[in-house]
Amino acid sequence: MLVEAYGGNALSCVQCYRWFEKFQNGDFDVRNEECGRPTKKFEDAELLALLNNLVALYFKYDQARRRFVEWAQNGIAVVPDFHKRILFSDEAHFWLNGYAHKQNCRIWSEANPQVYVETPLHPEKLTVWCALWAGGIIGPYFFKNDEGHNVTVNGDRYRAMITNFFILELNNQDVQELWFQQDGATCHTARATIDLLKDTFGDHLISRFGPGNWPPRSCDLTPLDYFLWGYVKSLVYADKPQTLDNLEDNIRRVIADIRPQMLEKVIENWTSRLNYIRASRDSHMPEIIFKM
Image (cartoon, rainbow, N blue to C red):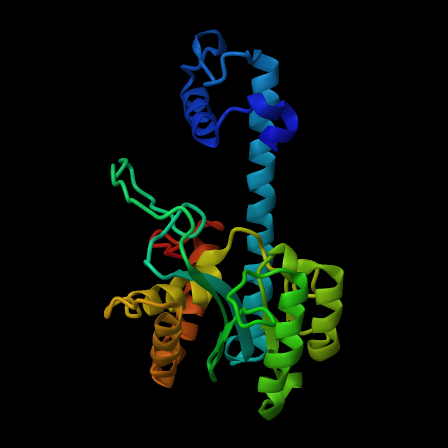
């Protein structure tokens, strides 16, 4: 939104938050503020419009979370094991050297940790997909091309995974009793993908543009984000794998060793998160764990 409004002269999100705090405290004067872009000056009306847009955006996100939490809790009230019928899904990157970057790791702290990590220019990585529910874990699935080389996800590869792997793995399950959840990634929400998933799950689809709308910015409600990926990454690098094949073997082993009792606790924790979010007026979980 900032780039759309101001092009290359957009102020950073960090600076915007600082301005917003000053504005709330009544000690903001646009004439004394630098936006970090010397070619751009902001007028009071312009800044107020920007802040109003940001507030409206976050209000929209909060409304989506509130509606989803109410919908999910109503589902549990009608069908007590509703939450145990949801197949939660997600992808994650696993780098051979185990490093994290700003797109898959978030550090929430009042102080800058001042940590510097040296990383290679083009690190090797795997892209892994799983679905997790009270009945077990489907996967891992590793995205590879026809030559067997590791690749990232796009719409065609995601749909191929759904068709050639996921649906086949569901053959032993009563699909009519299950729901499928995915986040709002572009490859997930393309029309062709949504149509494919509706062919299998009908109205039992929780997704952006799906019958059940998944709220944006809600990784604190995704068991793979708040449990699986962090748990797996805490173990697969213990023996310092030297090749992607070694890393893939470790991932398969760690996921296969996860006990059903642990998954039951993870899914029960999901209902506690619904309760917390509703009681805290749609706030994110304070101990939120992002992908690493």
